[in-house]
Image 1 (cartoon, rainbow, N blue to C red):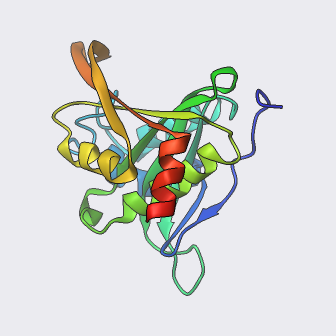
Image 2: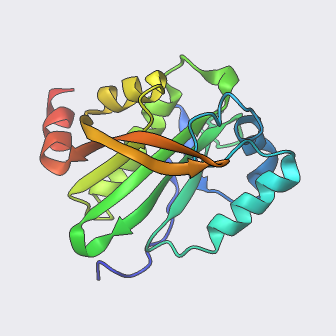
Length: 193
């Protein structure tokens, strides 16, 4: 049934392994969550320490997988998922009755420019359009977040418009652009790749 809480499966790509994010990932995720520049375009300020990052992970785990799930992304070494922590990808705001969900991503800053997030998000999109039966996948991206806009374009997303003052972060209103990818567009992109 579409509304049931789906399992958080392990996903793999040529270079990466994605598994359910858990408290044990706090130190790795803090490489991104604790970096003010990496968190500049998130809806939360940077974590003060690893303990705060762990609290954020634990809080997110309280939300049922019918609505939200997050994956720790790690490099694969010799076919095993024991490599370096790369970042995190997630889906949230899932509405099975509308066959819609939103996605997010964050990369450890030292690993930029290697195509790792493109690869990780490709696996998440396949899961979203496949097992989760989404027809529409959304991403809200602040217009100044040029790296995320480039990633969205590479993945086939289209910019739809600006949502003015959509977020309140540290007492400041922030606008985001709505990006979307529809299943037929994703399928067409897979065939042409």
